[in-house]
Length: 146
Image 1: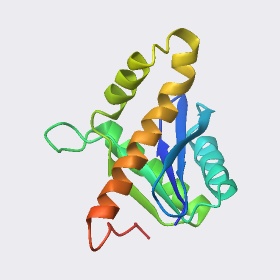
Image 2: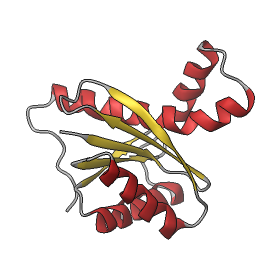
Image 3: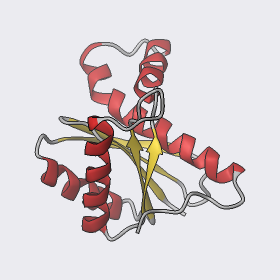
């Protein structure tokens, strides 16, 4: 199944996509859009263009597992993307993914404007990789919201 990963941000939203066998998650670009509804529509369009069958949106829950305002905002975004795309959508815990993305970029010595341009798509790839690992290790994958 082709799954589309999303790291939603107020300015930049990172995308990732996996292959049909769900073995490899790859960066799929960054959307720069400040308007919530337009970002959701363009995210839905990008998922359709990638022939995605499911969307996974990063869900930034707090370290103690509680849901703060940012997590609620991302949940609303995921719901709007689901409505606009018509695809099953899953919220996936993204704790520490941006930190991990910065660590990867440090390891590859990616700096300056180039770093800013790719950190969100790297974070989306990490979110998607985490979800794919979960699916691989579970007999019953997380059910998408309908």
